Image (cartoon, rainbow over all chains, first blue to last red; front, side, top):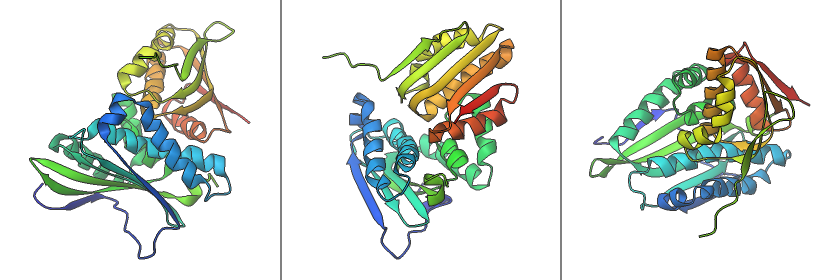
Length: 179
Length: 113
């Protein structure tokens, strides 16, 4: 890709700052060498944010589940395993936004674009069902299908045939507390 | 290097065809789950009654959900009668029950209260 492009349902950053936010920078190789770190990062972000909710245990469980999918994606698909990746979780009132920023190769970007476009077309449950039948990875489709997340990405050239991918998953706050 | 303690267990239940999964299941790949759930998949390949209790699984990542779906696909092919027990108190299990009920209508998916 030669210029910045957006695919799927990209979260429009509001003018107001988030009600609560936490972000962390990780090096993908650290996650790969000790896979449990993915869960540690997910649980930490979710635990921090759960104090913004009345049903804290429910929020912690849901947020950890969703954040974990993005953390694992960063670990698996970062093209440069030594280049720091960023993960963040923001509370914007009606929406909770989980995001990741990492460097990916053309093959992963192509697959991501295809899946995000398909999910944005409104068929999250259908995409999920098809991936189950084909025995393929479910991560993003699961987040969209089970948790009603709007998924989108901004993709910018990073040189050497690589791209910087900023992926966002915006969840309704009602979904986070299962109300 | 100290060997790490497993965070999960895949065990036979008290009755024939019963399996119990416990703990935190956030394995790194489909291959890791294939190894972990191999006995369960073997059981699913045999026609008969198969019960899978996941009520004590705290977390299951999407690779694990795919692996569990793979077991059910094997059971569908073999003609096994599957009952999957989950807990309504665990948010992701409620979601999973809803998804799997739609995908595998021939199997019984039960949530306790």
